Image (tube, rainbow, N blue to C red; front, top):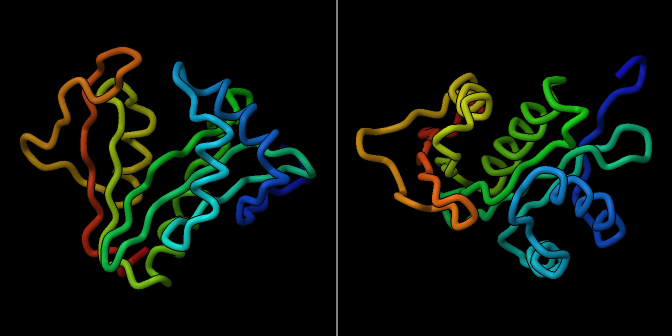
Length: 155
């Protein structure tokens, strides 16, 4: 990344072209532009973009309802993976969840996505026996592992 730093900002409609590029390069079944448009309009959501200079290189989002936060989506452009951008976004999501009063945070991750699972463990997420959603991902039929960070206080 050189001397430029990645900065995290709230997602706006102006970011959606970049968000869609990240989404389409990251998932077999990407979210639609309309889905993101609807999500960023809600009062219970937090959606962020990671920018390097003026380029959207990643995005992440969550729902925060009462004391619970649920990460809905996080992705980084393939050519920028492994640089800590996903971790930076997760840390910012956790910080913002705590600021909104969330006591815990949860997410689903593909059973075979070891790099993401390792990141979440590094950030204090754990799994529990049987915490699997069978066939959760419609595109591949892959199972999702449910992970939690509870309490969120040390985010």
